[in-house]
Image 1: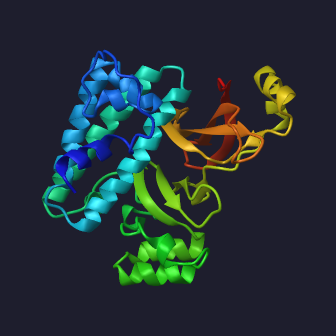
Image 2 (image 1 turned 90 degrees about the vertical axis):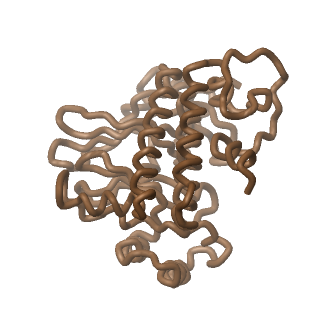
Length: 313
């Protein structure tokens, strides 16, 4: 793949809508005349974001240089997930702050990955080696990630997890990764540490969204961040009532994106965005912000609706 094409992919998927040419304030790593998504347009309008974008692409390119094909696939999967997270900044109140933070976090992660991969280790191996030196002891570790899952849907029939396990073992997946698939019927694409509770990006066979998130190493051991149902208390809220008055059959469609992690009363809060619609393939009516809370002992307390915001048509 040529460098020019690779750098364009590193920042965004192929643009299908071309923006009208004009005078952009910033100089991003990609052609702002072809900015197609909300986040791309914000980057092109802001010099600081454009600078962070260029820095991120430079570090991403460097991190991929001289590593194995498996490590390149891992970085590619992480970059795809990050692009989705970047777009979720549109759904929060402080959008510019969210974009700056998500770029800074990605740059820090890529810098760390580049250092460990440059020494012949994967980022996950480096974390695993440090597990006994500092921080909490994890039952589910970074070794749970399967780094060669790109073509599983073309190799295995729908919901054939025996095929998935055979494919994993043939490609050198860890036994921890195999056991997780056998037990949970999902495979892990990404592992992110957040103290006592960790975040997984997982994938499985589904008719709609194949990828979603799981929170692990608390009690219970695995909590999937999806499938929220509006409670009677939620339906008494004026903002929820206004939306349901127009679309009484609307529900949370279980297409969550991770937004942020917070410390709350000594525990952990993971905030995700989802959407309200009358069917999973229908027009999205509102953005929903959901909090998954764990107390100071890492016990799961439940999910609560933080915000709901109608989307402009």
